[in-house]
Length: 88
Image 1: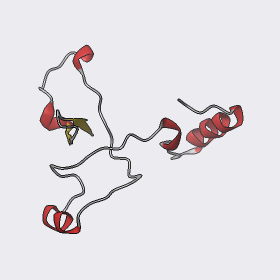
Image 2: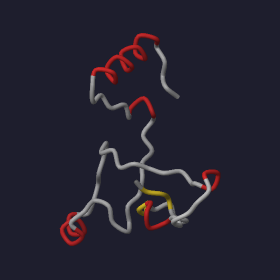
Image 3: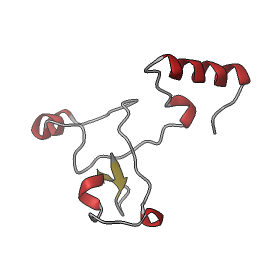
Image 4: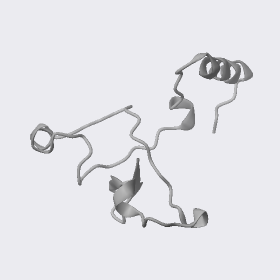
C-alpha cells in the first residue's frame, strides 16, 4: 500500500503516516494491483523492485480492478455484469 507524496509520487504507507492517527485524518491509500508496470531496465536492476523513489501511480477504474478469488467473488461480479452496472 502507498500514499501520494506532494510530488504525486507513491511512497510506502508505513513510511508516511504517524503511528497514531484519527480516522478522519487518513489520506487516500493506493494498492499495487499489477495492471501495468513500466520501468527503466537499469533502475529495475539496481533497485531490484518496481516500487522505488520515482514510482508513479495509475488509478484503475473500479470496474477494471475486480478480483475473483472465490465463488462468492464470482457470483458478485456475475450479478454486476447482468445488472449492467459500471461500478462508478
